[in-house]
Image (cartoon, rainbow, N blue to C red; front, side, top):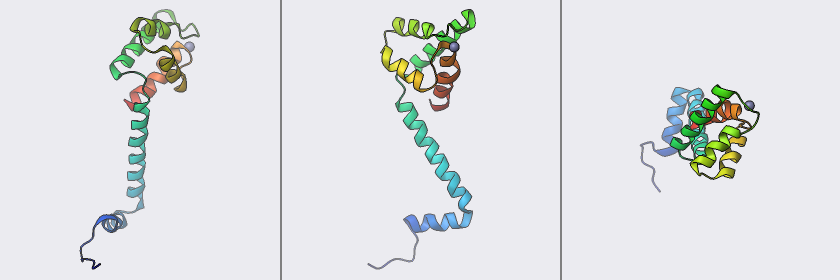
Length: 116
Ligand SMILES: [Zn+2]
C-alpha cells in the first residue's frame, strides 16, 4: 500500500499533540473521562431529572421546616406519594451518600446537580 503524503488519523493527532504539548492531550483525556463518567452517572439515575428535582425540593423543604430525623422519613414520604420504585431510589440515594434526609439534600442532590 502506498501512503500519500498527507497526514491522517493517529498520525495527524500525533502531530497536533506534538505541537501543543502533552498537557493539552492530558487535559483532553481528562475532559473526555469526565464526560464519560458523567454519562455513566446520569444513566444510573433511578428517576427522570424532573422527578429527582421534585424529590430534592420536597426533602429539602422538610429538613428546613423540621430538621433531619436521622432517617429517610421525608424521602420515603415523597417516594410513596409519587408512587415510584422505593428500593431503586433508596439504593441510589445511599450509593451517593444519602442515608438520611439531610444527607439526601447535601450529598445525593449534589451528585445529581453535578451529573444531570
Ligand atoms: Zn440527617
